[in-house]
Length: 149
Image (cartoon, rainbow, N blue to C red; front, side, top):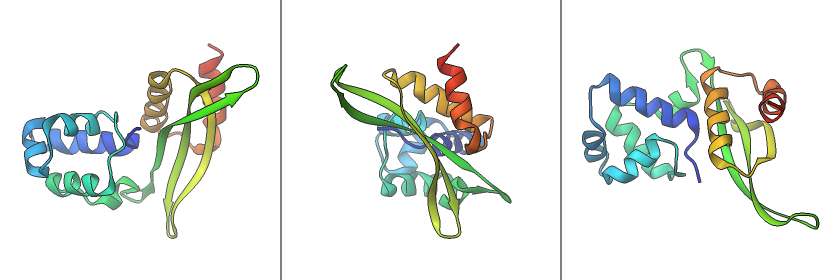
């Protein structure tokens, strides 16, 4: 349902750095303006092919999403899940995965499921974790604090 938060922020930064409008970036990538906007906002789960086209248009190496400079980056990825419990019945819950890219590819460093039924809350929380470069080991504490506020 969502584009990984770090990728969305990375293309936004690259587009602004190149002083391109969203329309120009979409045209360079060969996709519709609306689709580009939704990817840049992290509203949709873009295919690898679309991410590659956008990256090429903006002059971004896709590996930069995983390793910016020498420091490894962690992607905080909101996800949707369908849950069915005897007490609540069937509902949609949202969680966060912390993904890290290493020498053997992507690995899930942390995952917390069913944080909230409010997808926008979980997305904002994932963006905050990415912006603050939170270590995955602290994800549980941050989620617990956010829920108990």
